[in-house]
Length: 140
Image 1: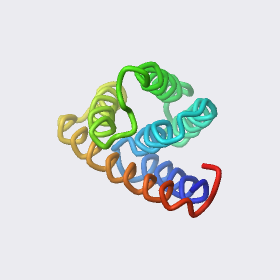
Image 2: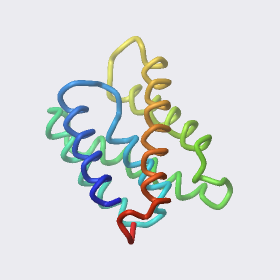
Image 3: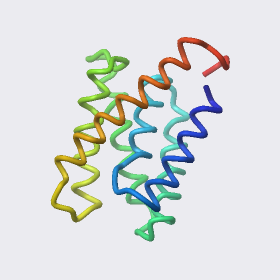
Image 4: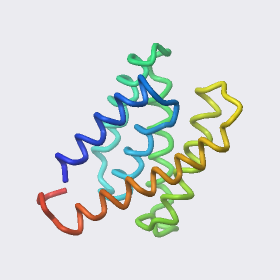
């Protein structure tokens, strides 16, 4: 699972910094945070944000701050909601992607991009969940 997560994470980092404006790194981090529920995801979110800002030629730390705050909110609501469901991931990825796109892009199609991001986030979550259920690689 860690190998698959690393590959998807690096692919999303490359695609977001060069090809698309969809927040693929955010979606990958959200799915990892929901499935693992461990604190090391904060370190990964910080490093991912700095790398994404550097590759996208933005001010360093903006994406990191957004990733850290949103993952903190997800962990904060972990006790109130069942966060390991597709419905939560769909809603959280829509809300998080909408906020991210509102802050960091200047396009007119923010709602359509947020809907597409929510669908992609649910697909990534389903993919990670299948790997976790199969336990092909232990200790995820």
